[in-house]
Length: 385
Image 1 (tube, rainbow, N blue to C red):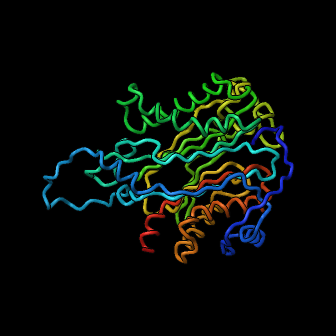
Image 2: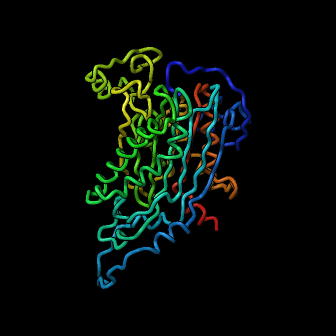
Image 3: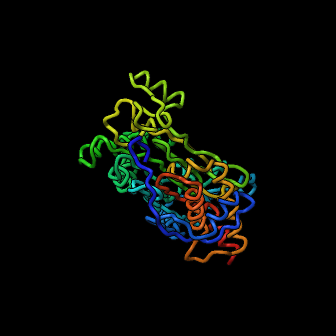
């Protein structure tokens, strides 16, 4: 919830999480928040695994390959896609926090579509024979509504379908793979925005952010409108995959003013003093200044990757990228090393729980929605067997 009219009323809820042991990373107050029951109202928690069978079924559709390459062929760099074939674990929380209403929505769609490896960045190994193989793609998204929950809920139900449809359109099949994804995301966001109107989902005063990640064995494709965010966490750093679209961001400010709009500083920079972001789905009453045009990034996966964190600004308003990365990586490694979790509660879920509790303990005034995707779960599980 990001519009100026939203309230900050307290709403008490119960939530219990496993102790994180993060005293070396967090302050004393943070540690208390993450290691005991807190006043965090749970709207939903969920965890899951994208099983290896999805990958195996997709791989069975592979094209024939030439096996006549001489044995003396030079050694290739390791194919990161092959090492990531056995599945992905995730955990999520979505809580109302101190708001009166829940306006966030989350979507997790394992194997929402399949594609050839060379259509999602190919392989990092030169001359790889795997580029023609069919691989499953997984969809994760957080939508933060404002003015109501209708648009966020609609996006959670529809956005992944629209993007898959746009990817398959005949008109874009001839493009280079990155350009094809850019078109699919741009058209998908615009179509979803149009459907909000055509299907009378909500009034023109309602909108939502959207941060979306499409994950393959070797590529992370991120897309966003608004100030929900995706961050890739590695051992020693946190890499933002999206950049918040705020009205006072220089390029966004220039665009808004060029269209005759104004950015007014009222409890932060806001378009016409109302909305604290410059792009969103919905919000037709603020066109042409608020637009549903996403920014898209492409990141090749590596062995250094620990996890992905997607979250609404209920988390990012009170924690930096670096703090989130430190907490997530520290806790994931500790849980893997000490086997402090069971198959029923994967490490990614415990991390999502703890990040949510920390944000609430730091007085986040918004709904808090967090998805954590463990990018090393398979390797950790293999070591325990």
